[in-house]
Length: 317
Image (cartoon, rainbow, N blue to C red; front, side):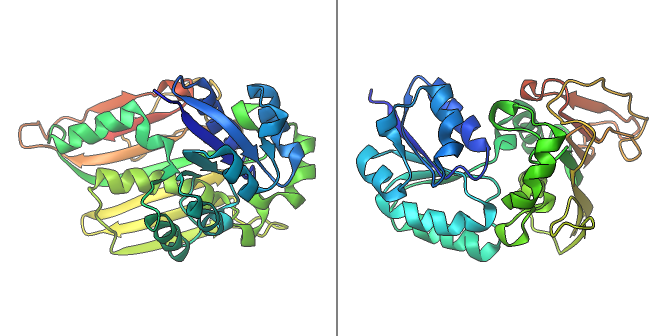
């Protein structure tokens, strides 16, 4: 069986290094080329994966023509997602786009239209949808084991997007301060801010758990600290026919959610549980299934191993 030929184009988002590692470690895939306008941004991938000089490009069209990939990983700034899909799709390749899907619905529609013309696939890198804990949750919902979803509450964030590189390599406070004025993560026109960075995780899970039901109304509040043009904290409230769900994003926590930290005890109610700012949490409240006892509160906890002890889902039913 021939291996999948994978190319990584545009290194705006540091997740490119993580996604290339997935391809590098997969027995049925090979990295046939990487491309970015700034050669310095590719050096980490060159060193980590032993990419030969003749597979390193600064011209996307030349990269596509010479490497003939089956799959292209794209990691541009959020506001550039549509433009890059339209640029790469004509090469007749499958595309994996770094999250979020796009900066607007109009951009998302452009991306879909561009790929539909080719008959290839477009996928968005939403890893939360692949965690075993979340798939187990969805299965239990669909089987009616734990009843009907009433609310979904999501809270996620980290110290900030510049505090780590690919493979979670940490960056110093001084380097972060120096990088902020120049980073697309902190530029509004580029699609920066914690809202676009993180809320998609929560609403993707919420929509999935509620079988695609759309909210009646959406309200969002963002906090933009003095001196910044993007938010570092947002709260989105979705009003469904069945009630309210909340999705909260945060840059500026004390630690990162993938760092091993002690798990504090939660209080007796998921509504009032005090959870650390470093914990990525999805809380879903259920109406009990007919066969379940409505007089007893139970809490099921799952932890996915990739979060190394910090990620958990709390289900109240």
